[in-house]
Length: 139
Image (tube, rainbow, N blue to C red; front, side):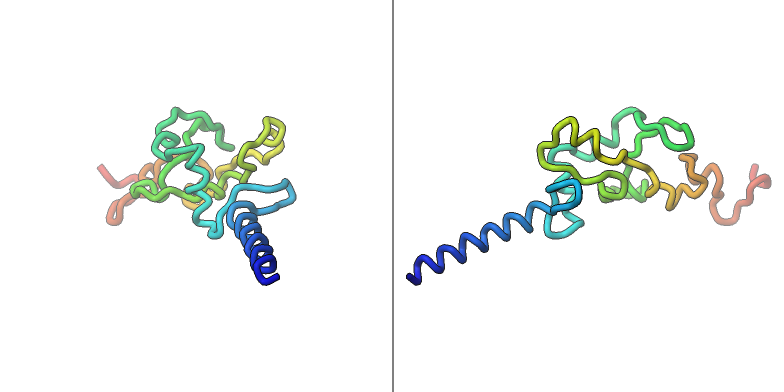
């Protein structure tokens, strides 16, 4: 009797760990996830990565400003920090069908506008001068 009880507890525990450790259920159905949201980017890059490849692709996204950009950039740009994929993208199931992909909300670049406050992708130094310099006065 004791062996059966223990076995069922272990089966149930294993099931719970598998479900809670790898899948997160949302309105759109089961999606890839991990126990910590910070790990989601690692999961994404297992299929969509490496990040360096994404960052080196030619501009293929049209921003709301009409600019063609490659939104996959390190943030901040001068460091090698990969931003969280969920800043712009929505989770999907492990093997999504074309219909599931089509039903996902489109990626957006609102995250970029936390720094690109003019909602365009002009380089920072084109508007912001280093300390000690003023626009219109510099040689």
